[in-house]
Image (cartoon, rainbow, N blue to C red):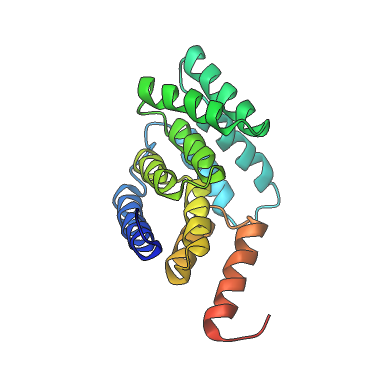
Length: 190
């Protein structure tokens, strides 16, 4: 049985590896799809009043694997999560990652299912895969921040939140989480 300290250390190491992958691949990933680059630029603009459309277009593109069968597995996994059947969700999403290992959204969806099941280690491993395939995945970075915060790694959580916000500065919940942690670590009362 692993102790909490060992898990926290493993999560911190996984975060460092994931952030390293993001830094290595930033700007290089998805270069073949100029449309996504334009959408990322629109999303990253803090003054863009139409950021929701860019966010929606990005998420729609992320959810396309290129295979109707793989898209169906993603949909079934997401529906199982929404219905609270995490075992079925993990099963569908594991089939997806097995058959489409280069599909970042499959890894991200399974990371979410693992997180909801309280399985932080496997969730972080899937977040690493997501970020290695798509370093622009602000949702994976935000999820990593949430896990790090829940395991007491406040400084690492703040770095993950900041990395997510650099890509998508309009995430109210992540802005609030970052502010909360900044106040906590500076000793300022909420």
